[in-house]
Length: 354
Ligand code: SF4
Image (cartoon, rainbow, N blue to C red; front, side, top):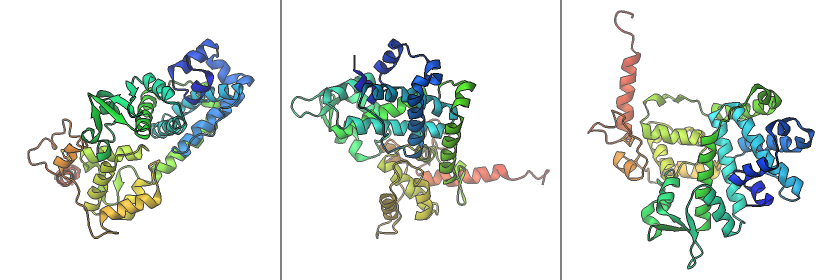
């Protein structure tokens, strides 16, 4: 059984819930008892800092025993507060923050502890005796890297694969653990919270909603300039959704959407506005990427990838979309233009009502 130090650092582990149960700490006590006031305060801080700055590790105490206990308990408190907002964007930002915190802490962790965390997520992993690298079964690799495979560095074909095991550096393996935790939190939240919890954390809930609204306002939800987002093909809708949810879109996905939007008339500034809602937004780096792709800072203007390329990078989201299923559907721009015309026709008043 992991010790208190381990579960305070990684409170999403199943052992953490067991510990709280064994210590007989009831929800009611956690929410009302003066003894747990520091845990509630830490939980508020955890939730607020997660939503405001998802890539910044939390400033929590991992020292003495009581500090460890409060840190551990701050996790369920933060989850309740985030759940009470009933806002998917707040949940997404919180999930990113917890996952970044995990990798920041685990980067200094012993390999056996990292394996223990991975096993808790159901990820099969071994430390290679030969290389000291993390060998993950290819099925697990495929499951947890589906979001990144647009980027060549994550494509299975480019990995060090031996007898079905993918050998990864610690840094890349931690990226997989981040993804596993992010998905777990997004799956589990929102938790059911009652009126007394909402009223106890009313201030924090309002602050979080305000922060999220500010991010939403930075990029209006349905229109980009004169563009009609309703006419976007499923692939671009998905990439946009990932970016707006505060998740890290793979490099190829960012490239595809920048080139797609550029082709529809958006300039680099308008595209940058879209990127600025992402939690890992780095103004200088993003400006360089966007201006490079759009041809503003280089002689080459990259072309938006067609459907065949999108498919090869795992970015096609056609599903059972009838338009994507047409034989002539070769490019996301073709989809957009066709769909936009269709929507325009639907909006026209009929001759009898005009
Ligand atoms: S078929 Fe083309 S337009 Fe449709 S989702 Fe796939 S890549 Fe996008």
